[in-house]
Image (cartoon, rainbow, N blue to C red; front, side, top):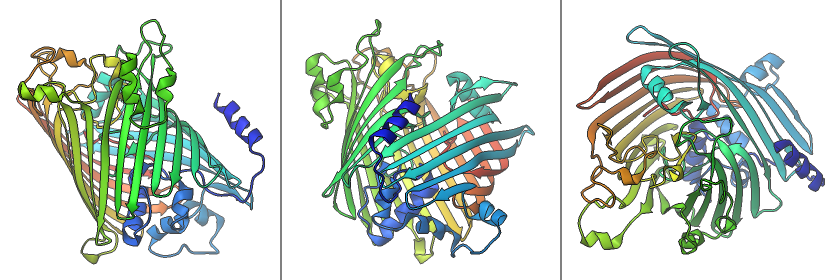
Amino acid sequence: MHNYIFLLFLFCFPCLALRAQQTHLPLQHDYQRIIEREAVKQNLDLHTSVRPYLRSEINELTEVDLLLLSRFGSSPKKNRSWLYRKLYQEHLLQYSDSLVSISADILFDLAVGKERNGEYLFTNTRGVQLQGDLGKQFSFYTAFYENQAHFPDYISGYIKKRRVVPGQGMARFGGENEVDYAIPYGYISYTPNQYVNFQFGQDKNFLGDGYRSLILSDFAYNYPFFKISTRFWKIKYVNLWAQYMDISEGFKGPVYPKKYAAYQYLSFLPIPKLNISIFQSMIWAPDTSGAGGINLAYLNPIIFANSMNFNQGSPANVTMGFNIRYDLLNSVRLYGQFILDDFHVAKLQEGDGFFQQKYGYQVGVKAFDVFGLPNLFAQAEFNTLRPYVHGHKDPRLANAHFNEALAHPLGANFKEWVLIGAYRYRRAELSTKLVAARFGADSAGLHYGKDIFRSDYEAPRGEFSFGNFTGQGTATNLYHLTTSFSYLLNPATNMQLEVGHIYRKEFSSLLDTNTQLFYFGLKTALTNRYYDF
């Protein structure tokens, strides 16, 4: 199917002008931090809450390639040998002329680690990527990863429960804690004019300015999508349609049930320092007979118009909210996010904690070049979601895909702090990240609101209950601290050596776990891997 569409694009748009870059930057925190730092310092007109960033949009404001090379702290050395350039400066294979630019790379994540209890861990990831620009308007990207890994116990427990590796697809079990899994990526991108970009493929998306997103994050496994991004005046308007896998009844193959989603995201940039965005999402699924898969009303591209589908008897799960960020002093970024999943104003007069008062918010701050020291970065972020947010009375309609949350890894019913610090000097970087969370866990089979895969109507006090509060259930504390030192080898693929230490502690009246491990690895860091939950 993807091949036929690729050929169709080539056939329909044969007149290729000078090439441009219609691929997007990797959806990875290193790249985001570089772009954001430049946007804050130079006061760039950039809609930063829509990720991944399209290279051509960044190029309108600043030279992307030169910006990424700035990670060296100096210009790359010229007239070096082929081997030196391939290891430290360039893509493995690359071709470029006035019309076409194509590159290919070998990808990997090779790491070994050792827990305090003496157990050895490893990650063995091999992959390839191919990307290119065909003229000024058309680009493509494809990649594939094959993986084997032995994870620490807390991740292995997650995998055994969900049957998926966090964000990386279905797990096939080997030894006691060894798993095998594969991840395909790919999309095509077409920009016919300065106003519109079309993308079709299988990948991830992120809406928001934070480390986490309460709307749509890149935590879950990738998915087929079609996206239209429209820019005019001070507006960026994104329509995203996605196909998700409904695993609410387990992995019952060979074909997994599908469900669908539509997102509208309107970003307004009145001045470069201020970005205000509103959004709506809708998730729906076919009924038990298989009917209702694609309802034309759900393809309406107008934001909030889908909310009126309830007048058509729509059973879809609708959420809405806003995102905001403001830049100060050309070095500080303030941001926030609010999500509304359900709310009954009339119930406020009847009592506190109605189970369908489902909302959450995020507040955060980022500081670049702290104390005037170039490349010293700090971030503090607070996230909270009330019980049952992202869930639904019909578990099929939860804000989830492939047995994982599409927004926050903790699901709902939590409060969380994320603290990040990083300092980079030329190719070397020292970073640390602390995640501290308190949530209410389910116990004795009761559903207190954290598990978004269970029906809202399973609330302990019954359907339409009052008295619900964030953290209800078994009070559980979680601390996850990561400290690492990395050395950048090749900016073309973000290839780096890394050594680090992870400390994780989770405790409540029912459990007390403690994980400590050291690791060393060599990787091409082009995607985010979230194990901090």
